[in-house]
Length: 146
Image 1: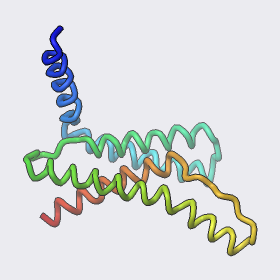
Image 2: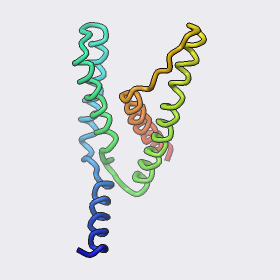
Image 3: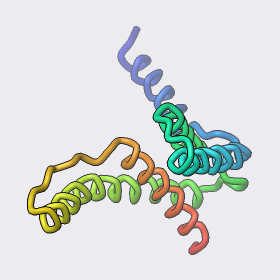
Image 4: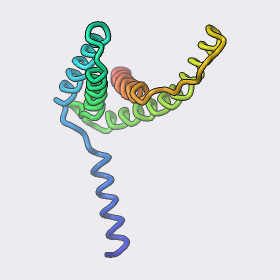
């Protein structure tokens, strides 16, 4: 196989992957799943207190937010695509800043209150949740402003 053909094939595969989006109705499914999962997390916290239910609900919320994030708009044009990319960029930068600052803030507050502090890492769920919520909110804000 020629190198050019191989590169073209890889380029087509990557282009197909980067343009992947769910249909618009997945947005409603995602919001519903996220709201149900959030409700289960709250109920679990105050009534049931089961670690398995908590984990399933957390993953359900992440899947719901991901569905909302990668679903098409009713009218998907160049402006919407640009706004989506801007929101992903903003969410990525905000996520990195969040992941770096939150452990330092927690450590400083613990040190000031208790005088002995332990450096705690930010959890995966927190970072992913923050990224998805930030992207969705910023994307909706950009759509309303423009």
